[in-house]
Image 1: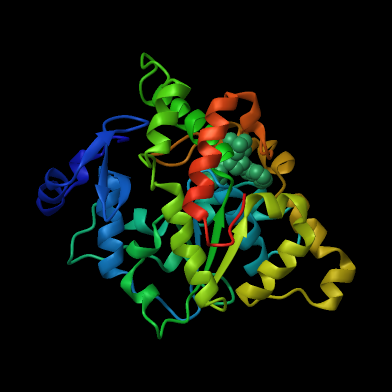
Image 2: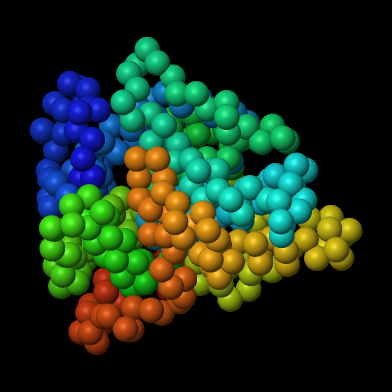
Length: 330
Ligand code: A3P
């Protein structure tokens, strides 16, 4: 899915050929590995990263289900950990001229096309306070070994979103990518992707298993995994930003709070502000989507404009069955 088969090693090709596959949402296929669905090139990056990445004790990893607000979380976390270097949030901040995905990369994608004798150059992501901020969509079972080790000090922030809004956001995004790659391709119908989503066949899906992997870990090791919902940040941005900064190890001082730094970061990273910046209206990621694909409506509950009452009922039922007994509600 998304092309790039030329980057695959022979070993990856052999592995892919042995895995169950299903129709991709963008192009080509998704492949099922350890219960989750991946595009071919991304799976290769995920597996190489799992084997090779060496975590540092002060690394911070933002983990999200696709379309749950990754762009927003990247912006917020980048602004928080870089406060030493960037204190002007209105005229000079890197987020005003660079898309958050360029400032905080997807770690596993740095390993695509890298063989076992090479290492990606990750030095460019070191912040002034010596922490490295990365992101990923990988399910808990496929995190790098060095991150999962019990002695690892690296912290994880996990963000998810209600499955109905996630589905609509992913459907719209995948259709934009299809168009970008080949404008003669028909958009996927909602009916078709709905069925796939319910079966768990979506980018890094099933969404419920993805969420549960991190939810369980956040209950067992709350000092290591901080669990967040898109809807919660929307509802109470200030409280959530302060808690996030504390968890990351960069709490706001009393002085910063009284100077309104928390509010300034919230405003800088808001949907309205980021989506209206020139870079996010007209820019494009290297080898990737146009920046504006990451900004659509940015609201809670947009699914009511697309899903039928039957679809809503079915998705709600799957969600409540999957999360039964886990004290997890959306
Ligand atoms: P919608 O499609 O519902 O509008 P991701 O960043 O994980 O790809 O998720 C994209 C979703 O987050 C899109 O949702 C997008 O509009 C929304 N989004 C992007 N930036 C945001 C921001 N700064 N604040 C809130 N939502 C944002």
